[in-house]
Image (cartoon, rainbow over all chains, first blue to last red; front, side, top):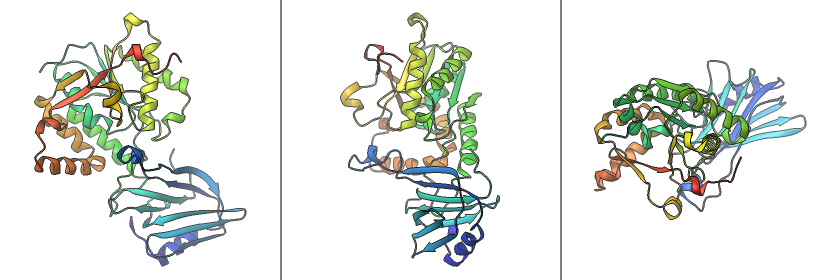
Length: 116
Length: 231
């Protein structure tokens, strides 16, 4: 993955617009967050291989960026995106990695289902 | 130290690196003593968060990396019967509970172990650990009491010492340090920061006996204080 370049990522988001695409979205602070610090309220969400068709995808703000997808009847967004790549299978992988190298958020878009 | 003779040892954990810190020395000791060991690993740790910054892996490439690491860890321990059970990281607790018990029962029937090693229910922190532990305990509970294998459980929740006290099974694993280091290094994508922590603590004067290369500790599962009445 490489650090987000807004122009390039925007182009990639545009290329998936108006198509049925499979979506992976997760936010996490780790299963051990409240084990290491009992004051942490551990919350996260995960969704994988949900099909959506967005009419507008936009990357916003300075790093860590926000990425939002406008759907005919709703929205998808992720906050904290730092890195991206178009992988060898043509899937657009976006992720937010904190200073210690731990993933905090991921938003991925693909024309084929993500494996399992 | 020579560990007590076993017919077969079955190890059940949900994540590829779960064996590394607490059990890889024990596994290596059994193998060295010629005792067959089966390690059933339920997931490929697909949801691991250590992906680096700059990233060395993506959410999608991580399971491939961790599968290779698991194979390398097995090799470091000398383990030949490694079973990857095909579940997905972080979803084990959402699987059908009865199917989970069946999975464990099948493993037990196939390997006929005299000892099973897994996590201790309610003291295992990660939801996948807890779900794995529950399924194993339930499968063993269904066996006739006289036929049940021994059950060593790993507990590391913050309330473990207060509620369970001290572990009653302690293995001196110093003679298989190299194998254990090999297993821990095999999972380098996940263990790098913990190994760095250990080096720091050793440098700060922590006695070696505290670290992972001297002792591994387990609790005999307490059937008289079973975590539930029945399932």
